Length: 179
Image 1 (spheres, rainbow, N blue to C red):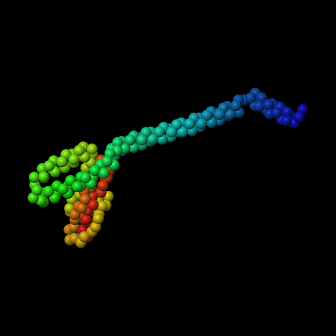
Image 2 (image 1 turned 90 degrees about the vertical axis):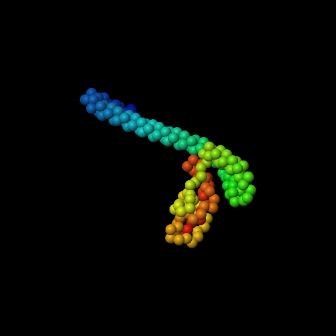
Image 3 (image 1 turned 180 degrees about the vertical axis):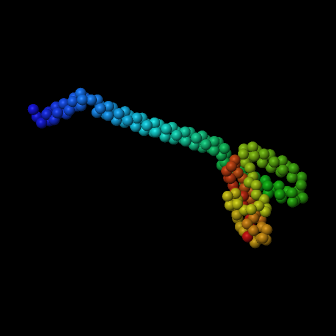
């Protein structure tokens, strides 16, 4: 017999003797196998929970993106109409100052209708008035002018109106602030 076969026979004999002498070693291997299976199960549960959480985050993120896309889908169109809205405001101001008051009714009707349509699409004017504290998150400072102590860091004049669509500002108001 070769030495390999002899070694194999000795190993088999030791296993048989161990099983005949008691089932302690078998129980230990069964426990370790059981523990290994429990550990594998826990790992798989952990993987499943992480995957499930990742999927829930994905669903939440995509639904938020869809909602945001729907609310700001018309942003480009509305932004391109803002100069027309500014022209209406300037025309109304000129007509009010001139002697041609007969055109005022027509201009104001058209301007009101145009403003109402844009407001129905979610466009709002950013509220900034003279005397408000300057906030760089809400307005854009064009220039600073010397002002008294009561107007330092405050809006002195609003040069151009700002507009927002929902919560997003699509054009910041342009203001002059006191220095």
